[in-house]
Image 1 (cartoon, rainbow, N blue to C red):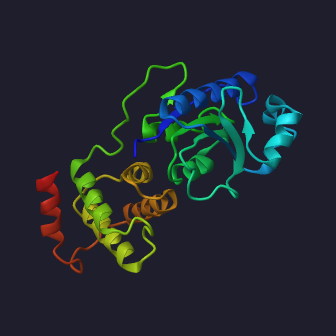
Image 2: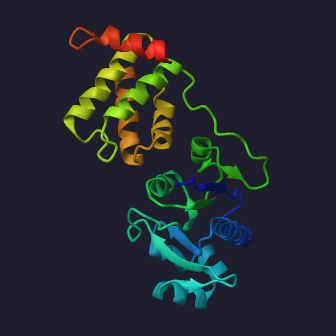
Image 3: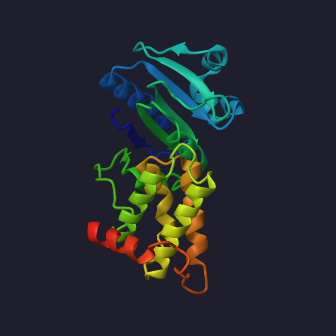
Length: 250
């Protein structure tokens, strides 16, 4: 499946222009991809009432959305969903993530079958990590290539190895997978590699980990790099051989 188009609108979410642009970009992505469905994603259903979003939509549209999808002027279908009502898959729709911040953007990243994501943050800077994660398009700016999140090739090779052996549908939920992650990160710490925990979550999400599981991996890394002394490798099977393979293949 083609990677979703990801786009940020860095305009005040309480300015009608931000909503107009979001709808326009969603339409363009839909037309390019050959889909008609647009989902307005908010934290709660209440955000369709007595907010700037309610003002932009107007009472009639809010009433219609509360009943189900409504037809847009260009032939698309707009529906309203929340983090509680939207589950697992967006069915090739384009998401407009309104009042976007890290939690709801992580939620969007965890959905399957998304054609596009248009994010409108409530507070400036709240979506910056998401933009960096994906190299998202920013309205009004030249498009940039996705950044290198971890520039240590041995560290990356080790994480790639972990990603191929861990069940990505459960992350570190299985004790065996958590132990494998623990071993790999301890080897890297013992071999003198710098702490990459600030970027591990985004790296793992980009690699196909679910956002919550990627967060668990980053938390484990922070714990290991917070140790006062380098961890012992004596109890880890073939620690030096494994490290040498990562270094050779990196």
